[in-house]
Length: 399
Image 1 (spheres, rainbow, N blue to C red):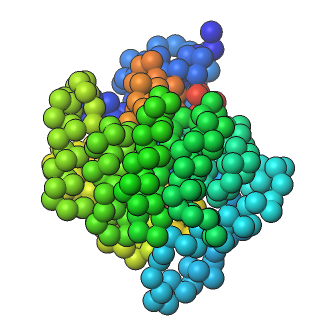
Image 2: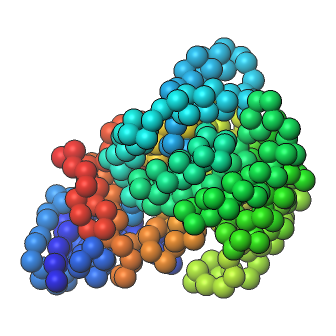
């Protein structure tokens, strides 16, 4: 067995059930799995020892919402939006055209580079979606490429109705032949339930088709205004509803009701629907920031994710998302870190594997070029990732 001790950790934010933060700590990794956590002076011996020289360590970020399978960019659209134009879902079609025209190898290289960027900034577990293909063959191609390159894949054939297609006919294709073709490749099914995208009835058809095939669901909901997305997520027991910018009191109450049997202290019981907040997207689209504070106060588990995509959030920097959540969403530092780690893991159904630094979990560790995690928000925008371990392997080192 291979053992590796990381020691001289100034602050270890475990994100365990008690929210334990240790000073002068160490972590023992055995064959890629966390084997021991505790005070450095009590650390067991190991075949290899790495002195982290008084740096802080967090769990690797778990980015539960991204759109990495694309070609081209939409910088002109961004400039226009910053000049006052409203965001509308139709810009997705620009990316669809560019992506369809890009062959497998070129697209693979683009996605690999984006994944490497995220990894270098501490993201050790990442989901991504299809949704820039919007034909059966293209959605299958994108799902296959995503399966090679990220940890979990979401089918988002219901991202936008392609130009010239009847909305109901396209919805039937998504919920039928298209879903059948990707079902063995993807982990989740998502739908953009929003004005300019898919109606409540159309979204329900896609969600029911996924449920009938035993696939977990996620929803893009309540991004551009009040709508049915959150209530559908509750109805279908979705893992998460994402964006959640425009929530009414009934939406928050409905989400909170899904967590009534959850013991937050022990992290046991029947879990509910995670509300995923995407602050980088909110800034780029000039939407109101998602009400993370209100959701947490109501007892809803939240996640923070990057929503990396070419139109509304062209960043995979989870450090930036955490800083924004602290500085502008009224989350405490501990709440923001938990949302970007354990919250993301819960939104993806992998909280038993990643999302915290606990014995038995995969050794995904984010080492900061700072003595405390507070620097993430205290020094926003600074390059604070020193090194990254994924499954116990050093995969990025800027030291």
